[in-house]
Image (tube, rainbow, N blue to C red; front, side, top):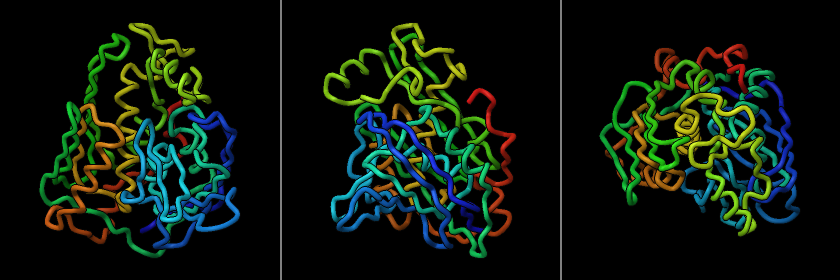
Amino acid sequence: MQNTLKSAVTFSGVALHSGRNVRMVVRPAGPEHGIWFRRTDIDLGDVMIPAIWDAVSDTTLCTRLTNAAGASVSTVEHVMAALAGCGIHNAMIDVDGPELPILDGSSAPFVRGFLARGVQSQSVPVRAIEILRPVEVTVGAASARLEPATRPEITFRIEFEDAAIGVQEKSLVMSNGSFVRHLCDSRTFCRNADVEAMRARGLALGGTTENAVVVEGDRILSPGGLRHADEPVRHKMLDALGDLALAGAPILGRYTGLRAGHGVTNRLLHAVFADPAAFRMVTCDPVLDARLPGSGISRAEIPAVA
């Protein structure tokens, strides 16, 4: 069955790229509503922005959504991952600015807030996207692929020259709360030189070592070090789940990313939906429901490090 929150939950914090303080409220929504963002700081025009793959307007550093009237909201991937990972299919997200708060750089604060409020089952079955044949996109050295599988799976490989990151690879079945247990607390990461370059361009103004893993060569500059030895690749998997959630429904298939970012994953969704023979919509019975992210999770499963 489709799910929504039992009651609204509020998050406040700084936006990563602008440094602006932002308030957002995630509210329950009815069946078939889907996920929508609403710009509460805009007085005139269309303020509703759908969380859907073909509304993605920019994928530089984060994922930005823009509606036909030009209203936009960026850095949506972490909350989208949290919603998908908690099995929440319907929500209205009010935000008083063009970018969501970064919080600690992971999805854990969102997950903690959602599970504290509780998830409400709705009397409409979930429809999922079943991948029927492999679809792959390649952009330079990066690639992303979706292929048939009986349950949602993610495999990711990253390759960085910095010894603090290096080569990392991980695979997870995303069923039964795997996202909450294994990925939700993994933070965004970057190199110190990249932070300095972005700030020189007026970006990452809200970025600190408290809301991102910052590395320099073989050193972790963030206090406390890594939450997991392979935290960077786990965060890339988190981002992938959030960007895949913009498909508009859970995906029954295996995603494989190699050095992929937001743009490559969005191109992959475009390629899937451009090929009607590559997928079909299925109505989930209890057996399929149990294979989806978010099934049977509890607050106790949130990692203690977050």
